[in-house]
Image (tube, rainbow over all chains, first blue to last red; front, side, top):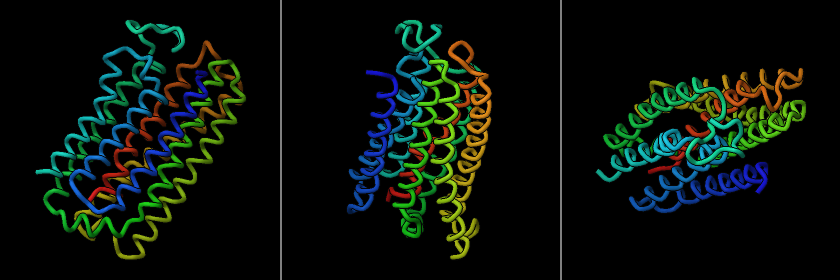
Length: 83
Length: 195
């Protein structure tokens, strides 16, 4: 796939996931729902890192560092929600 | 390292921009991580206050801000593709589109700030709004700096100062904008949506 097309697909996925976040937020609050919202946020962060920041081509260490940022934060926020 | 993402191999990899920018990005992400976790921990201590205060924010407005930032990110990335093909002037046009999209975020954010201040929901209203102003205000300053960088890159593109062989500075500037986007996609659900 051409690089420009990859970028447009990433943007469309990010927009769809953003709408998904707000829709989930309007449903009745529950721990499972909050975890789903956090997982969507991680998915969006990965799309930005791999798609826009081109981490998919980067050395493994840098890619792991960037992808793990959102995971660590989501895990931290998730722990505060269930504790 | 390889000189382009297309020719990069899995073992070598291709890291766009300057290595110093990546260390700067890691430092920025660490600072925001501390702020975001502070928000989350305080929320766990005062769940009712955070839930009630969050109702005073508009999640559709937050969504519109998200879409404007992401659209700016798309245009910045498309500008980078143009520069890689030595079409810097086309890149400048995409950067102007990115700035236009980012301006929508600025207008929405300033409108939200004005509305909150008019409603008496300032920095000292309660703990939620103290953290809201610190977190979103700090991010807002990063957006403004990101727009300055994109504007500067656009001007240099217009003057034809970037091409396929001279693009590291350009990529570093665009990376800064993507970092601003990356932080927002985690910040947005935490501040506007999660209950």
